[in-house]
Length: 421
Ligand code: HEM
Image 1 (cartoon, rainbow, N blue to C red):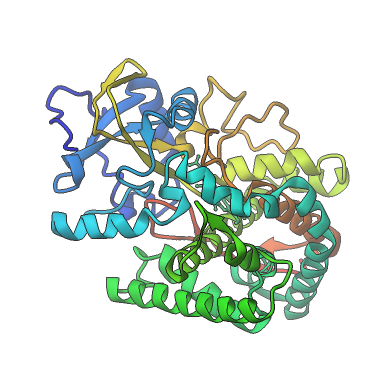
Image 2 (image 1 turned 90 degrees about the vertical axis):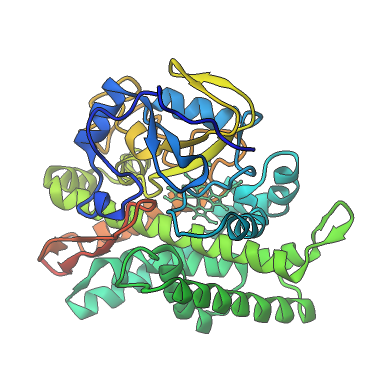
């Protein structure tokens, strides 16, 4: 499938390269997103050398939802869900990479997608997550006690990173001694554009190879001794009467590890950052628990929007937001812009932990790929902030936060803090 050229398509009203990680180096370009939403809500972004030489950028809440929910037109399988930077690969190399990425459930279309999602779906239902909450609270107490004992430190590594990591490892069945290694590896895989984590494509390749080795070790252990965990479910599952291959198991493992870690870590980091920037909301949070917990969690996740965008590829012509999308066009849906859309949310630039009708789409705009881990992420964010408020109410920022260099993840690398006020 080749995409037609886009000489006449509307462009962004100002110069911007959304593929350049530097565009996001100081955080989300919110003012520019606002201008896009009002002046060119669906525009063509040139990206010479990439498939189709560019992609549509979709910034309004309603349009992002429409794309997400029209999976029969907007495919995750055709070119994958990741808006990948041009790396100078030949078309043949690109096709090979695509074949690999299509083994990830994230990059499948129904009905194949449903077969794989059903294997793990039950491990993430509200009920299963409720049963896990006692364990999450134990983890959170321990994390906060250790940070408190240090007095000062980096909130991201001491606090935000820990609970998502422990939780997903617990669910999947990763032994405690492997958890730090998994943390480093997923950092390297997601932070490939940030020289602090990864310096070369070889580094990234090495990180995925090491991740697969952890997966292989776990699979071997569970084949010998099945347990009540996601690894065992994957090994016992069948799709069309066939068990998953070792490679399919490894890839599933990697998806869960990376998706379950980076996103929630950044939600927690941005949440703390938002409380530092809005001390009145921190005071309100501390004094109004537990009533305010659920609305605060949704507002933190909306404010953070850790996944900035995903892409789809049109399988047929489609009109979206007044623009003619052609078969073969790629479409990037910007959750980070949509979550500040004033036509969908009241005063979206206000951080309000009591916000009602918070229809944010940080977990996706609905449709088959809606975040598998949403219930888990919500529980983690609620439990960690409840525990912070309880045990370290005087936490304060001692220096500016540093952001991840990425065009995909809205990440914070470091927030220097004093835990004791
Ligand atoms: C605040 C935290 C999180 C955010 C903001 C987030 C965001 C997202 C988004 C935007 C998608 C794509 C939705 C779509 O294409 O319609 C997604 C999918 C996914 N998420 Fe999350 N996520 C979070 C936490 C988690 C956790 C804790 C897990 C744990 C396993 C997880 C696992 C997944 C998986 C496996 C998918 C792919 C689902 C599919 O293709 O069917 N996520 N997430």
